[in-house]
Image (cartoon, rainbow, N blue to C red; front, side):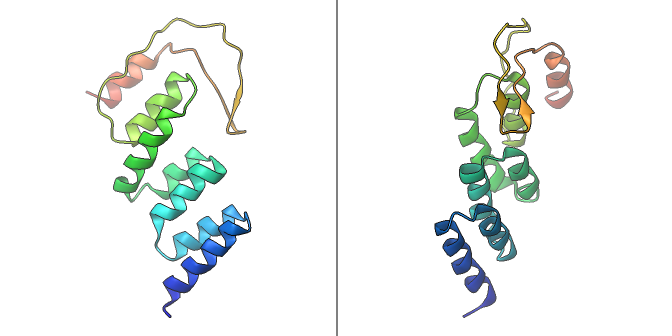
Length: 128
């Protein structure tokens, strides 16, 4: 049995044991980037780490980011970031009005931002 196969089998076993960080690491060591990204996106819900892991694999990143965009709250900045990295070149429509929606925690590290002021300038720079 080759080393990558051995690592993947152990990674699947770690998934059964709910050891998601270690499973993702073993998937990466066995060059199974898509499986690692799926673990990070689905089980750990860490989209920032998904972007880092899939940076050199845009084909993997596109599919996962498009799927994640469907489940996101109404944060125009985060939507733009994920759409851009997901390969979406369509200009997003957004309102620059500040809403009084309650700030909620997202992913235990990011705060949702309903304020879209300045987003038009960023879109112009990213999507000429």
